[in-house]
Amino acid sequence: MRALNRAIAAGATRGAMITTEVVNDGVAAKHMRRAAKGTTWLGGKLTRMEGTPDGPRFRIDFDVLLTITE
Amino acid sequence: MRRPCTITVNSRPQLQNLQPDPQARVFYDVFADALVWSDETPPLMEVGNGELVGSKLRGVWHYRTSLIEGNPKEKFRAAWEEALRCFPNWPGFLSERRDPALAPMAKEMRETGMKRYEESEEYWEKKFQASQARKAASGAA
Image 1 (cartoon, helix red, strand yellow):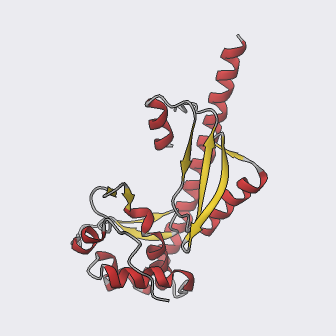
Image 2 (tube, helix red, strand yellow):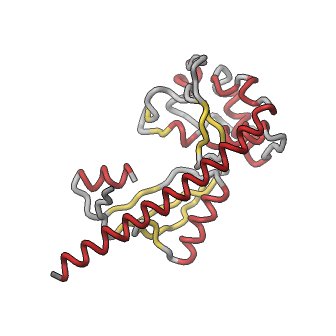
């Protein structure tokens, strides 16, 4: 969230974020389900990338970046 | 197979030179699914060429937590052994940080940490949906 809001504050209106290796099986599985079903995460489309032996990585493409405020 | 020192190419010297902090606090890292002590990464998480030290240590932390829980995750043994070989003086290798006596705390911190993570994800997803609805409404007006 912090990274997204920082990008928006810097003027970004769209963009992509790449996660580092997700070692937590539960969190990785959730992201993989989203990637497979096309479910968005905060409006971003997830794509599974080639990972490392420690876990998968994901690319999240945001066509529209919206400031999320409290 | 023996892995080359690739985990933290740019920050290996910093990790090797870290000193254990007697006041270090322990927390649960959701993405590593592991216990982590606050003195195990350099003060700045990002060093040399933008390398994110914490994210590179996830496999090492996960393996250590699996040792605590008496159920070593073999998939991460190579990461652990690589770290032992490449930065053996790292505070994360203190024997008291892989003591099986920590297992109940690890279990409790995982449960609490995952619950908070899921609640936070839900919270931000709702906030996002609300922001989107506000934007659509202002566009329609």
